[in-house]
Length: 331
Image 1 (cartoon, rainbow, N blue to C red):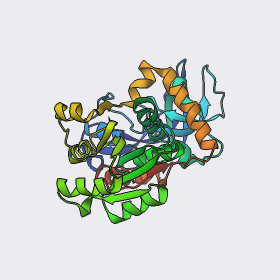
Image 2: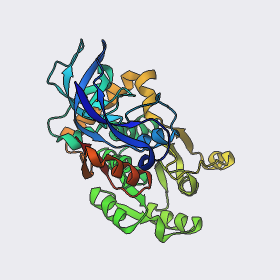
Image 3: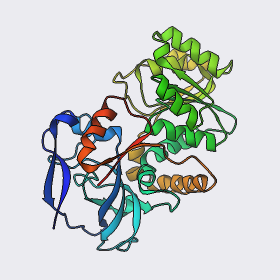
């Protein structure tokens, strides 16, 4: 049996190197399942992998798509019988930007019945990242104030959802009036359009006005660059600044004497590392997120659903920073 999928044989920009091909379906090994893809949520790491800029580099050629909702079609063993609807991470090089994908059972969960395929596919990476950053790494408490950068994006909207579900106040930073509207509708208590504040001093002033005299108890920063620098200037006493990534392209440096004087912490969060180094924490986060979802936490913000033929369009827009919420591909 053969099926269609996007293939990367040469590293580069998604619009230049991706090719839609027919290929033979892989046979799942023990501990793996073959999935019929219902939906694949696009992630910024997909773009970085295609460019060859991500920490993990799958062997060429590979099919991107690290996050999936799908039906189990073949399972040599494990907890998911054929026909199960599951969500989670794929096993590259057989990613989910295809009609079929491979996944390891240890990285899958039963898809929440309350979520449609597009939202189910979008639930794992962003919400796990938000939970592990805000709750595990930053020890967020009810009533604290969280500053979320890139607050209209996929992981940013997830951070808003988790922070609000935990009883926090949220200040979001976005790039553009349309994105400000998205973050506000999703639950941010205050939103700052950084494009209206082109200098670092102007952005810091706007942040201070929105955060109030205490400042930010927790910062969720997937951007880096000036976003990180501005955050250091508005940290609350004993605040926690969580570094998620560097979507802005610039890796900042920290004046550690400043962290000492203001008694704040800077911590990193690479969620994927927990899947291998501390899987029990991932399971704990999953159980907590299921409870919050059942209690009314905002589900993933899906802004666009594309057919498989147009997956490259979504990756190009995501790589250029022009998307809001989650972009999902459904074969």
